[in-house]
Length: 62
Image 1 (tube, rainbow, N blue to C red):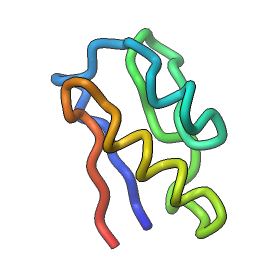
Image 2 (tube, one colour; image 1 turned 90 degrees about the vertical axis):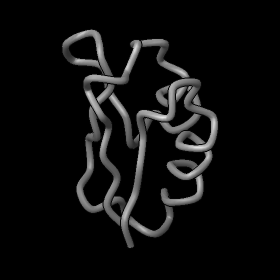
Image 3 (cartoon, rainbow, N blue to C red; image 1 turned 135 degrees about the vertical axis):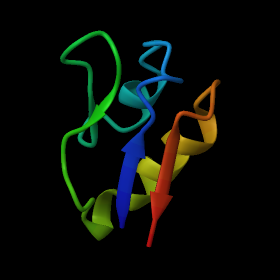
């Protein structure tokens, strides 16, 4: 599964990193995906991060 973060929407709140630190990082003050594609064992936490993003900046494709 592939995840992306819309840099124009991300507010840098780090909620996604708190939920899925293995998947998301903040190198420049906004979120980016560390692993592409996201391995199956990390997909559940990445999906939870997507659901909890307050500005809906995270999306995925199968």
